[in-house]
Amino acid sequence: MDAAIPDRLLKLARWTLETWSRDEDWRRGGPALTADEDRPVDGLFVTLTRADGSLRGCIGTLAAQPSLDRALRETAVSAAGADPRFPPVKGEELAGLRIAVSILSPMEPLAEPGSVEIGRDGLVIERGGRRGLFLPEVPVEAGWDRERYLEELCRKAFLPPGAWRDPASRLYRFTTHQFSEAGGPAEA
Image (cartoon, rainbow, N blue to C red):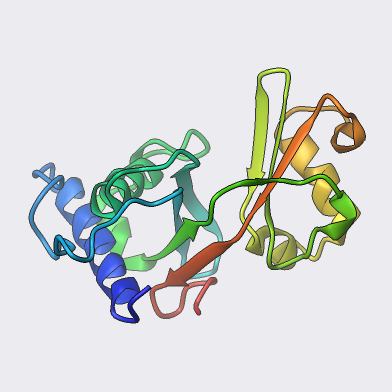
C-alpha cells in the first residue's frame, strides 16, 4: 500500500463522519480516493475511541468489497451510528474521538489453534449460525494469552467455553494493515 494512502483514508473517514453528523451527503465528495488509489478490499473495520482509549464504536465487514473508498465511508458511518453497544455519535463528540482503520487480509482457515500468534492474528469463529471476531490488537490490549484469546472469542460468539476445540466450529485467521489518527490506541 502506498505510504500516502493511510493518511488519505483517515482524512476521508474524518470528513465522512463530520459530513454525516451534519446530515449532509457523505457518500461522495471530500478527500476521495482517486481512481488509481481505489481498489477492492478483502474486509475493513473502523474503530472509534475516546481520548482515554475507551471504545466508542467499532464496525466492519469481512466480505470482499469492490471499492475501498465506498467501504471506508459506509463502515465509518456504521461505526458511529450503528454499533448496537453505543448510542449514535453526536457531532460535538467527533473532535474528541480518534479513528483507526483496519484493512483485513483474506481469511484463511485455521487448522492448528496452537499456531495463533498474539498481536499478528485476528480470529473468527463460526458455529451453528453464530460468529465472533477479534482484531489482532484486542488480545494484546487485554493481556490475553493464546488460550484465553480463543476462550474469549467463543464467549463473544455466545458459544460455550472450549467451543474452539469442537470440530463443528470453524476457525479463521487474518492479519490487518492498521493505522490511526495521532493519539489513537492503534497508532502505527
